[in-house]
Length: 112
Length: 136
Ligand SMILES: Nc1ncnc2c1ncn2[C@@H]1O[C@H](COP(=O)(O)OP(=O)(O)OP(=O)(O)O)[C@@H](O)[C@H]1O
Ligand SMILES: [Mg+2]
Figure 1 (tube, chains in turn orange, green):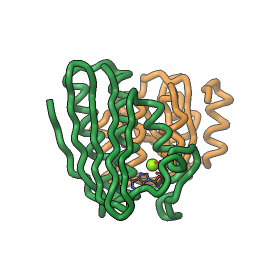
Figure 2 (cartoon, chains in turn yellow, green):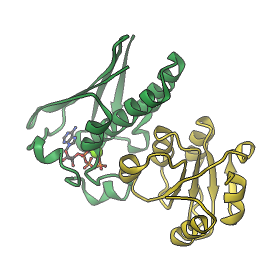
Figure 3 (spheres, helix red, strand yellow):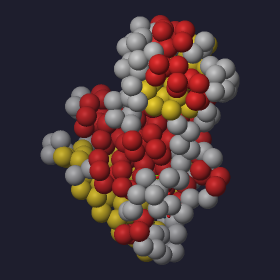
């Protein structure tokens, strides 16, 4: 699935990385605990989270992830956006809650 | 090649900056992506630990043809029981740290998992030095 499809499925708004929406993702992970992302993520390249701080982007960067989706309509702050742009990480924002967002992507074929 | 980073212990928003910079440096040198990933995940965990448990400190990195070595030195409270601290799920992090997304007690075991060598020297009330190495 491409990030463009992820965006459509989640009714999301692309905050940065508009030019990278043709990137393919196969696996995703949903968590508000960056400790767990660091400990359990293997090849997941998409992170869904309700957490809002620069460590979300740094964690995704360390794990070589391509995209972060902020759930529940959370508005990322300037410093988060800047960091993501610098690391070539796509940021999206969806009004959906975590469970619903993950469920829709899983339904559409993304693995955990 | 030697690089050092100061880790600010008062500003959580900056925690991870050093690891992020070192990751860029390793990419520029042209290391294998899997090596970079192992080194920087371990480094990031240890850097975050310095900030949330020990008021910051200094990270020294040394790159040789055989391995990438890192020393994390802090003047924090020290670790009372290293065996316990190494257990998955053991954490003394307060709730405010958990609300920042950390404090699951997974950091030290994760560092162990991703490195070829790991040593902790610690003294209560004096500080902690964590040494890690990844063979290249
Ligand atoms: N540099 C340090 N100085 C003092 N205590 C430390 C230090 N590093 C780790 N510890 C102690 O060891 C415990 C376990 O560390 P570990 O990194 O495994 O988990 P955590 O930092 O609590 O949570 P997580 O890493 O999952 O976010 C910590 O809760 C803390 O009590
Ligand atoms: Mg930790």
